[in-house]
Image 1: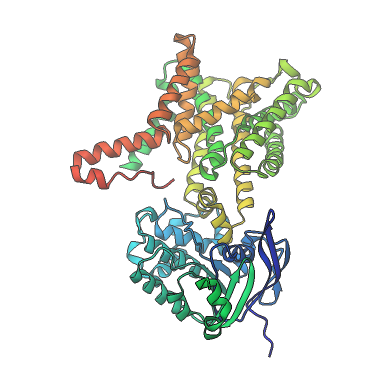
Image 2: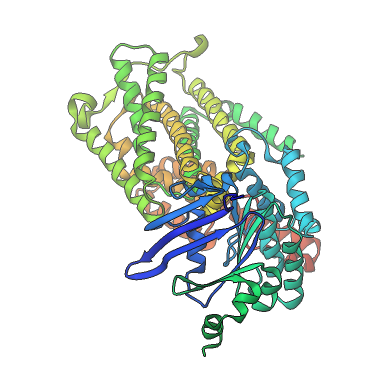
Length: 248
Length: 327
């Protein structure tokens, strides 16, 4: 039984000028897995995400999704193949309401987005799904509020609602707990934990306390390279992890 | 209430030749409407796609010149109009493919360069464009047997086209595609990640914008019964852009108000003040200083503030968000 990994990268390389940010990274995430990627600032974690989503083009190496080579697939098309992501620096639509934000996410996967004649307000099916996506993260009551008038923690949940609304196969979460209070972290963790197993999750996170409970396997990136990879206990016990994180 | 006001405005516009007081004013109204069509077209890019263009007079000119050539070549009005629009759409597709290699200032500079190329062709390629002398056409068309020779008749025809343009914009703004387009303006990277083909969305917006610019070009040609390189000069593109910006980008009414302002200043103020350009400049400066998002959003904001203050003083603070909703 050798099912293709949900997401795999092979010898993935990217440099900005002379700076090698992703140095021949190999990574394979099994379907349904919860993978945590950790590493100090500048380790190339977000760049790895950008390479996977197609925001950046790699200098070398390949990206495969369920065995399908998507290295040359344009970014917008990868969303249709089932990759969704959240951003470290929140990039939502501040002037629009929460409902409209999630609606835009749903439209991204729908042919309706090309329609210049229909009235979006009357698309009950899409709007209902958007409301359901907001309800999933407990924000249904704020659907009509402009995003600019919501809290940071609420926006983080909108991010997750938008990603989940697309019904991804692979979900990339870029520091979903950053900048949140302890209560908000718990809320977000509960949300993420409740995501069904048919969604594969890769998470970048600094906050080891919260993230460790979530992860099954952990990859440690350092200077663009995979330094350690293994189960939670293996990685935590590994001397290199301690060296990188505790500076020993 | 809102429908009543809209109906009143429509009746007022339709009856304009009866109350405007002479052909001079009817002609100015026609000019306002034809430039409003151009401004609405430009607003698709500037307002909803966030792409500032300085070359759209070129598209207006391509439509006008194509129709003029077809008409002087002995073709009928139907062929001239259809042919001119087809040529304009092809040109718009080509311009879009070139200009969309950049965004922001890059996009502006490419549209500027393209506009100048069109101007150069109009000015220098005398065998096609008759150079500085321009091309005169014989007569206006008579759709459905109705001659457009008189100012009032031409005004009504222009009004119909103008209303079609406004209608298409109202549809666009409320449509899923309109929401997608505004999304590419606000968060292009995020839109790609959400599965939107941002380039294609911008390309289609450029085509729509080009279509209405071409329609404005036909109105321009039939109104003047003449086209010359002046129509495609950089100042014409800049003026059209100023209409959109002064009226309010990304609003339905803004380009219309902006067109009215610029055309009225050109025609009316110039009758009284020799240096009317100076007055227009001063007005633009005032708009930029006091209503940086344009006349329509600016006045709407003042209005809201005034009504909110009258209602309850405490509501005025809560009910005064910094940005316009529904853009």
